[in-house]
Image (tube, rainbow, N blue to C red; front, top):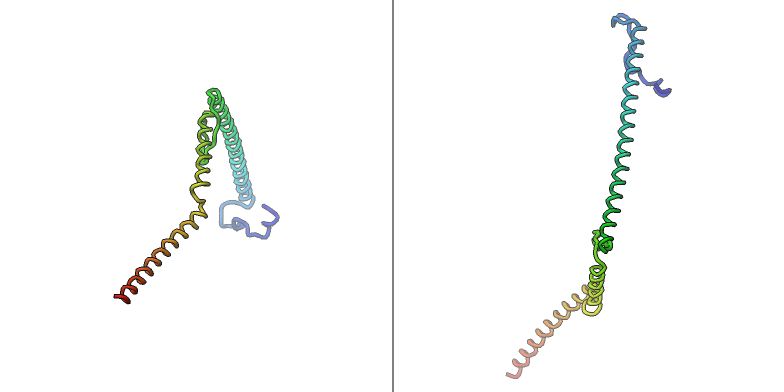
Length: 158
């Protein structure tokens, strides 16, 4: 018990004479043996938990070493065949030949060039679509005005 527990109520009611067949000394002895048994059980549980924790840590270190060996062997395998480690835009690790990598890069550069010359970027696209829609709307309004003007002209001189 802690010093703070002195104010708390005892876990069991105090011994009352005549209630049990045990004397006060026998009750204290039973309680002491029960406490010793509980302490031994707690120590055994703590030792078991520490052993499990040590085993888990050993296993995780072993797994980490295995992954490292697998990665080293994978790299050695592909380098022997002239491949280079390439990480795609999605984060996928690929082992490609230098020709494949240059082909991918040239495609990417060609795609960027098209974007500069022929297409407009995302913000430009929104602006272009808006202007295009406004232009179409303006053309429709001008067409309606011309049709009405022609109708008025024909009605005046007819």
